[in-house]
Length: 109
Image 1 (cartoon, rainbow, N blue to C red):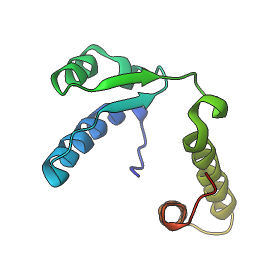
Image 2 (spheres, helix red, strand yellow; image 1 turned 120 degrees about the vertical axis):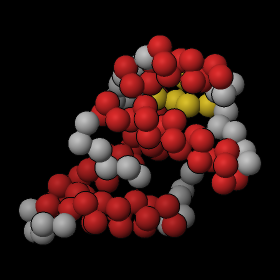
Image 3 (cartoon, one colour; image 1 turned 90 degrees about the horizontal axis):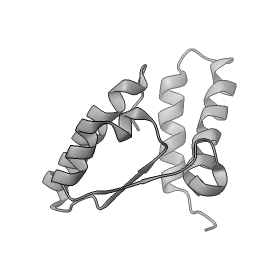
């Protein structure tokens, strides 16, 4: 998880993540799914997807039905972070811890 102050940094972080996956695991990312935000649909990102043979899929914004577990977990993480923010000044660390717990916990699907 990357905590960003501005969503405009998402494309740079996504490109870095895709390159890191290729370098570290010798595997390529096949599909990138996101909403229709400009950070995923811009011309430079389209060129990057084409260059790395990545299929880009888009979904409707804020539709848990289409985005499934990712959207639900995202909302859950934000709700927990908001609740803990009232009690502490370390919400960033709490959010990261909550994500780790979600990753290692078994899921029902």
